[in-house]
Image (cartoon, rainbow, N blue to C red; front, top):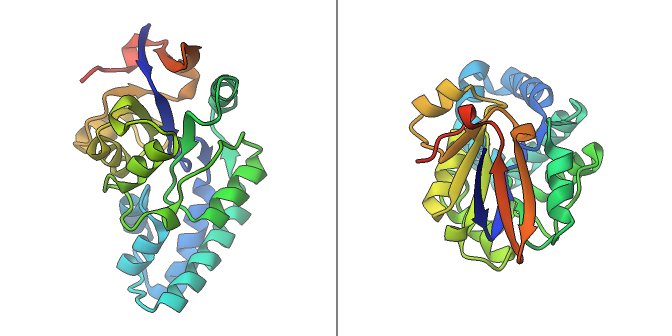
Amino acid sequence: MFSFIVDAVLFDMDGTLIDSTPGVISAWYKFAEMYQLDVPAVLKETHGVRLVDSLKTWCEITDPETLQKESMRFEKLAIEGGPVVLPGVRSLLKELDGGSSNKWTIVTSGTSSYAQASLERTGIIMPASIVTSEHVSRGKPFPDPYVEGARRCNVDAHNVLVVEDAPSGIRSGHAAGAKTLAVCTSHSKEEILESGANPDYIVQDLTQVSTRWVDGKIEITIRDDSNYRDS
């Protein structure tokens, strides 16, 4: 077992708290019919990246009105795929929410409408506020999303834990100055390590993590020391 103290915890959403993979894959294949995409390549490069940035890069959409329309169409297709809650998430969020809903939040590359629809569909506890793609000018792997997440929790980004499944999100957390915990829910441990994202800790999923409140701060405990590494 290994424990450490942070001021707040910032979670990615897709791949970390929920799994919307079937819906996302289906949506990209639908988009490939119009945009002639190499879907396996798209899936490899876009996980954890803002949808608007992915659509600009892969579908070459530059018109703002078209970009908004296609973003909404993509998200609707993804939601129809039926996101599900990943292991350990409900109990961990219940522990955190029992202390303060202002010291943890969700930082997602999705839009506000997509995040709200996904969280409502899965019944996940909502934090006081969440950070979505509309709230930052630069998405992951830039530091902006997690800097904003820390600001909303009224803490310094250097004193938070970022929980992520994607290399781009891990890089974003590090760039913000945070400690990072990688969950191997969308990438294998080997893939995460080989990506060069260098998370501070790695677990299979959030069943291996627990929290408790200590004098207004959050003690994080990783229960299986064979699946984490301290940088």
